[in-house]
Length: 166
Length: 102
Image (tube, rainbow over all chains, first blue to last red; front, side, top):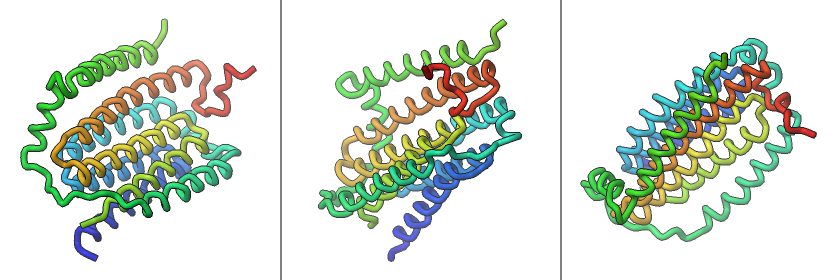
């Protein structure tokens, strides 16, 4: 096992273990902390995949913004946190069977398929090319603008829905 | 070098964990967190495909970025809805949010 594979294994265990604890932990606040750990593991895997920009964005947006938003929501709905009750509903066994079966179905397909693989390295100007492709009319300029409109709509919608009605 | 299938297996496992969380958790915020896990799994496989199939083309990374944007919007709108429901019903337990049930 090479060093890179060892690092991959560590990150994979971190991501999956923290993800599992996210869906299983009884306290919602602990679940958020485990979610942050899992997202950090995914960011590490992005670094391993040489997508440094995405790793940075993952840390900034997921860990910096979305997690804080979730923590706010946990704090604001603290009646649940004080008296959590059972975290899982009565169909949790069926859910486990379904999720497990789905993985059992996927795993042999993924492992058995002869994935084509390039030996090509990542170009040095990937981030620049990514930035250009986002504003290039022939590539992603339209989705990019649509995404900003959608973010604005979500922002206004979230404020309107969550504000105190008088 | 790590084979592509390892990344895809991790992504598949993460997605299945998310599926389990969405189906089995009672708290609406926990369900939202499980959805974030699923979106992350998809992102991981997108970036893995980008790296191993076409590293010279930025499409894979751009798609992952758009997934990230949608995830942010989803989190903002979803949490606002949950807070609004909590204000009206004093609960975020999805078992008790059954206004539409006949």
